[in-house]
Image (cartoon, rainbow, N blue to C red; front, side, top):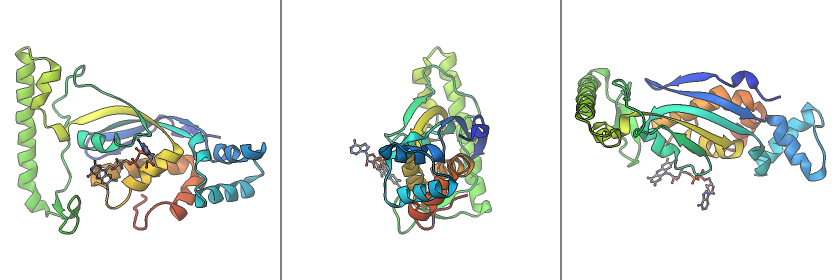
Length: 237
Ligand SMILES: Cc1cc2nc3c(=O)[nH]c(=O)nc-3n(C[C@H](O)[C@H](O)[C@H](O)COP(=O)(O)OP(=O)(O)OC[C@H]3O[C@@H](n4cnc5c(N)ncnc54)[C@H](O)[C@@H]3O)c2cc1C
């Protein structure tokens, strides 16, 4: 049976973000039964079903995993949105700043400041100390306040929402969207975005999906993915 108790569950991510499971179709058995459709068969009991599912993952027999669907509602900074929507196998619908006025506190404030990696041009490595980071955090909060005040000033002057948003700090604005994906393509996303070379912020969402929704919903598939799919060093919780 699909893990219905997970539907509606919301998990906090980053300082003001969250991810919620809105709907779920299918379970490990749906994957096994889809594979057995080849010979018009169905479940053969837990032990043989589990063995078949592990075999499917090991041998890249991927289409049965597409029989399970997850639908999420996500609130995350725009920089995470832009990385997420590169995954073309998901379906998305997002909030629009043309319809919705942003709120004063709708901006991401990182908990720590990561240092630029010396060996990987797009990665970070290590962190500033709290003392080193404190003035930056203060400056960021002042910057957000200034941006937001200008945004409100433009709205008050009668400027349209679609244009007034140019005053907002683009990468940091929290954004809300709904998205749907099947388990095969979600595994692809998780493999890339839980990997240590993915940006910390999207990794936090990917790990939340895996830990709070994917693994409880599809425990055999998660076991197989940990064995055959995820890169060594992937943090799973
Ligand atoms: C660590 C990291 C760094 C990145 N850095 C950059 C960067 O610097 N610049 C940048 O632009 N992007 C970057 N990306 C994004 C990356 O190039 C991919 O766009 C993103 O990871 C989505 O992967 P995907 O295309 O495999 O996934 P999906 O779009 O979900 O597609 C899944 C699979 O379906 C197939 N597929 C889907 N659409 C097509 C198609 N039109 N033609 C052929 N096959 C298709 C492919 O096999 C693909 O792997 C980065 C991603 C990661 C994880």
